[in-house]
Image (cartoon, rainbow, N blue to C red; front, side, top):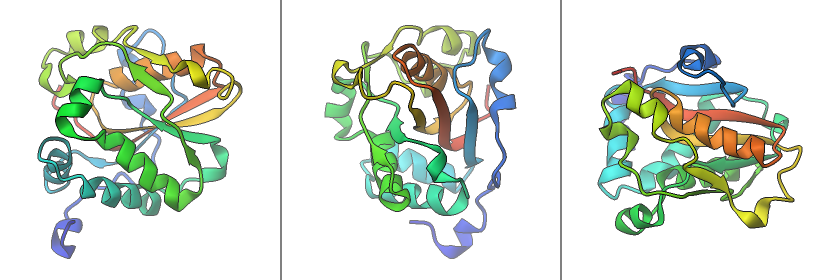
Length: 198
């Protein structure tokens, strides 16, 4: 997916908890740690965009493997994996949820169970297309909820929540809030890259 020369250009964060970079955006932050693999810069950003907007779904498998090999996490600290949901209309248009592909591939490598725990209640404009930081932080409140069939299955669980790119952290925070309110013990964010354009 990335040639050797391009791979060497990826700016990895190498195992630092990045929670401090977004926690001041919220009066309450609902995830316990934030693991980010790399900076959202070319060539990595180009491949992420190909995955999201140009039907390059195989890149999601590649990213799942990258997360496993570049983030030396103790996977036994987590009970299960889930991912940021997209609205059914958007999934129908795109053909897949890119975060779900990444999460499923990661689960093949680390042996954890991946479950589609959350649903998105409204088909809002993509966060990447919202330029106002204030709007990004406010617009996702109450958008996500736990699927009814999982209510008895996540109580007391430590959940790893997967997304592709984080900017303000609003999406991760809103999903984490929904998981904690439904009974999860802890939520940990894990993303491919962090964009800092805001």
